[in-house]
Length: 447
Image (tube, rainbow, N blue to C red; front, side):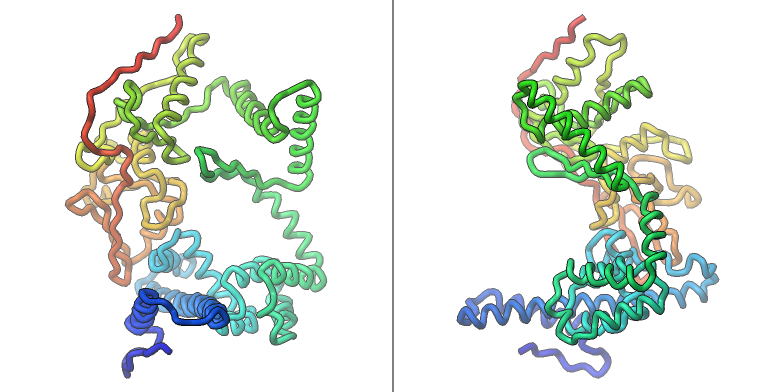
């Protein structure tokens, strides 16, 4: 049983009380539980319920923070249309996650209490997960408030149903009720989804990536059918590659071939390697822009293949750009410029150095390069004073009460309106250790 510290000034949601419970759990994990198997299962269930209730408590606090910050911004004269800017970023930092996830959590917290009160009550009781709540809100987003409240009532018709429902079941039930209550709104939403088509990429194990396309159903099914037919034809002609391999290779060849035929330009690939990995046999890991770390040998394979592709062209396709790293930290060293806006080369340097959004825990792709110390306050346009940010984080820091500055060690310290400080350094791109004698590998270009 948890022993909450008594306090007349603060409740159980005070950080000190929550930290006390966490310390009790941490201490309990140092020793064997002493439970039998049935009790272990019961405790796992109880802890899962606790996790769910804890996320609901976070949502309640996030909603309170949003209301309080909006009042502060209103008193500061911030226009009503932009009040609340920066709140999601504060929530994200507090939860140690990306701005996007913080924004989603705050949106869920505000909507579920106002428009799905039965679901909110179930969440507070640990009967549903935060993801289950988000799915319910997503599937009813096209409905008017009255219809969403009706879906909420139907979900809670059986008091124990939600506790037995999986997340997919909750989404399916909401989708079914929404189609019945307002079919026109559902159809209209499906038509608007066409505008959301996109292609995304994310790392996969073993130096692979997942390239994902969100497409209208007719286009996606047709594209998959075309790749399938190409694979079946190749296999019928005696192709040794597997069906999946042929489909993947056909997709890549089609996209890259069409790009070169249309633009006349090759696709540029950012590869960062140490000199001794490029010219010698050192195994310092290489960094591929847009993916991450790969073994040095794979980096050399990529470089070899790219250099081999230049022999039949009038202009080299590979440009070796010298990037200097600190001999003590391994961070890329800055380049300077007198321009107010970041020049293309300097912007590319910052993107390579920071890799992803510089905000702690964000990990979103870099969309904008901005000054840490503003130009209006004398901040220079330099690599040291530049940081790569996603658009959401760059907008958030423009809200009242946000401050940022360079620390003596070159890290960026961000101070939120509540006074919380968050410091971040660029990731290390070069391993720093004793350098063995360089064994030179020769690259010979045919002429």
